[in-house]
Image 1 (tube, rainbow, N blue to C red):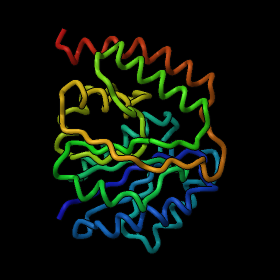
Image 2: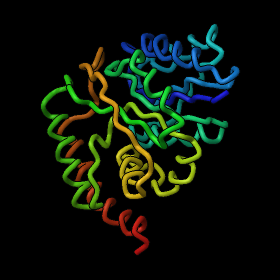
Image 3: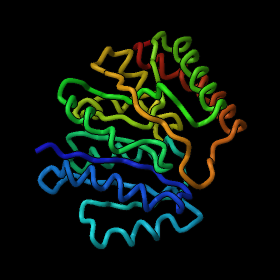
Length: 239
C-alpha cells in the first residue's frame, strides 16, 4: 500500500491548528498505507501555543507526527518536511499550509491520478487571499519565465502531491534552507519536462490568525530570489 506523508509547516497558528489537524488527519487515516502514512506538522519556532496544542493531539492520533524546530521561514520548513518524508519511507509526499485556505475535500482527484504524474499541483483559479498576493504570483510567473525560460502556471501553490521517487532525484537542486523551495521544485520539474498536471482548487481567505508575510518581506525575498535563480539556472542548464 502506498505510504502518504502530508507535510504542513506551521508558525503561530494556535487559532487554526486544531481544525487543520482534524481535517487533514482524516485524509491520512483514509490513505493510511498499512499504518505507515503520516500527517507531519512542523512548528517553525512559533511564539504561541501551536506546538503544545499539537502535542496534545498525539494522544489518540497515532498517524500524527508533530515536530518543532528553530524558526527558519516557510520555504525552509517545507524543505525540512520533504527531507523528513523521504527519510521515513514515503511513497507520496503532499504539502499544504496551516492557515485553512485549502480544502481536504479536494484531495481525492489528486490521489486518484498519483501514478500517472510526477507531481499534481493545485491551480488557484479563483483566489480570495487579497490583491497583493495575486499580484505577487503574477510577478513571480514573469520572473520565472525570464530567469529559467519556462512557463509555470502557479509555481508556489501550497497544494501539491509528488511521487517520492521523483522528488528524491530532484530535491538535491534546492539549496538548504531555500526560502522559495516550492517555486524552485515547480521550475525544476518544468525544465526537466517531468509529468506535471494542474488541477483547479478552492483557495479561501486565511481562516484565523495573522498573516506573517507582508509586502516588505515579499520584495526582500524577491530581490534575493533573482540572484539565487540565476545561479541555480546555471546548475540546471549544466553551465
